[in-house]
Image (cartoon, rainbow, N blue to C red; front, side, top):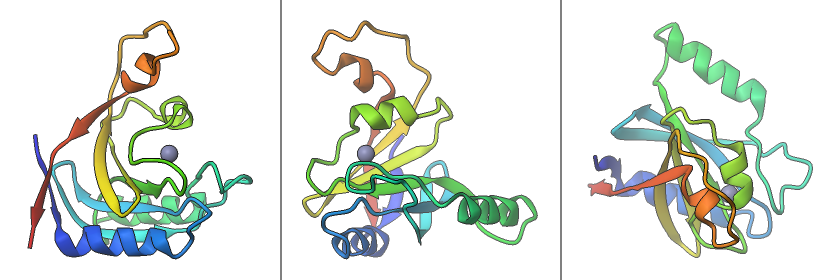
Length: 145
Ligand SMILES: [Zn+2]
């Protein structure tokens, strides 16, 4: 299932990530499971923001509450940047991922790739990355104007 995201949203997220080139930038993807309609930059409150991210829980709770009450868009997932890496999930991302079907958009080196967290069969960690790759499936981005 391709996920629709406008070019403007993708470019804004890449631009947002570039504002903190040494620290992971993060935020929310708003809309539905197959159509991201907006984004929201959220503070990264992780104590080691150069290697990890944690969405500010107060913002997350406020946005989720507004959506539940019908006052705002739903949370489709979130995005974060990998300042020194590529736009694929890290081991830390796999460890943090709940198998809830949410979208994980990752941006690095000016590109975006989209992943969905899934319930995976546990695999032995053979050192090749099989363990963490099993936690995500990559989603095609249907870029709209
Ligand atoms: Zn990451």
